[in-house]
Amino acid sequence: MTTPPSTLFDYVLGLADDALVSAQRMGWWISRAPELEEDVALANIGLDQLGQARALLTYAGAVEGAGRTEDDLAYLRDDREFRNVWLVERPQADFAVTIARLLVLATWQSELYVALASASDPTLAGVAGKAVKEVAYHVDHARLWTLRLGDGTEVSHLRMQQALDAEWPYVEELFAPTAGALVDPGALREGVLGRVEEVVVAATLSVPQVAPAIGGGRRGLHTEHLGHLLAEMQHLHRSHPGAVW
Amino acid sequence: MPNVSFDDLLADDGRVEPRDPMPDGYRRTLVRQIAQHAHSEIIGMQPEGNWISRAPSLRRKAILMAKVQDEAGHGLYLYAAAETLGVDRADLLDQLHTGRQKYSSIFNYPTLTWADVGAIGWLVDGAAIVNQVPLCRCSYGPYARAMVRICKEESFHQRQGFEILHTLSHGTPGQRAMAQDAVDRYWWPALMMFGPPDDDSPHSAQSMAWGIKRFSNDDLRQRFVDMTVPQAEALDLTLPDPEIRWNDERGHYDFGEVDFGELTEVIKGNGPCNRERMAHRLRAHEDGAWVREAAAAYAAKHAVPEEGAA
Ligand SMILES: [Fe+2]
Ligand SMILES: [Fe+2]
Image 1: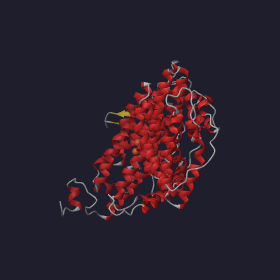
Image 2: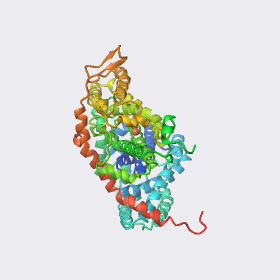
Image 3: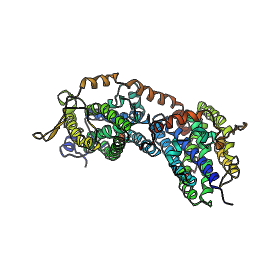
Image 4: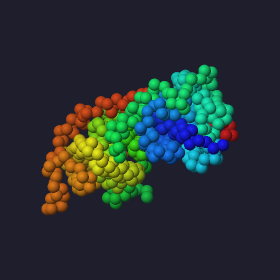
């Protein structure tokens, strides 16, 4: 089965936008982290995500074949054209939320990138192969903090549980059927949830029982938060049409 | 080398190490200077961090994130260097938060446009390099070694800043105006980074005798001007000082008088962003308290090794 270019474009864009939007949220933490080591670590993670986003956007542009660059795709699309999941686009100014979200996202990316690294698409396999090592570190970082917060103080336990409860409705969207997917999203579900739940339990926390959010990011249907994120991210670039930076 | 006295070490241009005997005043001066330097690195994350979310290309965003991350790393090295003198980071941060220790007043200026990111890299990191290269030969070993690592990264930052401005000054008229405006606003504050003039610099002589400081404030300021004027020409941007001209006799560029009254005001807390910078730092610190407490509690719980554990 060959994937038609237009759906492959959408698929690659989805993965790129997950990484880009997540990097944008991560960048906020630099100068705001609970300790200096964490400023460094979250910057590292954000930089990895941004690097993945750039490689994926560049590839998406090539697949589309209309000459769009990484910056055209990042800065000149409106929110309805973004393909990221809801998990990454909501505000992330709480450290526990940041960790809960990273645990889910990075574990999912780790399973996905491993699968993509041996997929039939050589470019995607190359990008994924490089990203596997990066997200392994992200998973580990999120795991260590989940343990510390879950099994730290009463306050941190409560806050980490609340964060998991808040993020959990957005987990399911990662596994929803996606047009053009080179790796069946549903096939990752068991592996991802198994790994995440193991960490949650080890951290003396409980796995939330909540109904999934309706989602729709892969089709360009987003929460109200994405528009604000993009307004901030894109405004300077758009204020100087055609300029080189 | 046992039994080598502090004075012998200094006379010999040797390095003082943490376990060597040292006068109290030397230790206090170093703690104050290294702490202030560390605080400057972390407060300095804010003005540029202000543009991470809005960087105009993904490449620039990545470079900027890496740069601000480097500054956090510089803070870490420097707090570690200070800790070799018997103080701890939490205590030094507390002194910053309560206003008992200062940070470089340059970071009390706002980053109003993207070009300010370029101007900070070019001028502020550039001035920092001129100040800091001599510190690589500072008499206190841990500080000198931290400075070697830091200076390497600062020179990357300086080149990146220059490159941002170069791109802007050769871009659209709007970009060019943005670059010139940033240089206009950052030039004089950058000159103030070398501190008060020599005849008004109370601690300098002692620091020189101790091998902490190698050159006077005015010498370093002159060195910075001499280095920067030709770079401004290469950028095709104007420095906002009509008195800048080459002086053949002195072998240096002459330049106009720095308004040290402004420096005094900013140090006193009346610069454009003093309150914002401190509020941002305090908020981060206070909002993160529960996280640090959790990490400490977790470490304490899991510190007892099990019987026979590796
Ligand atoms: Fe620095
Ligand atoms: Fe720097």
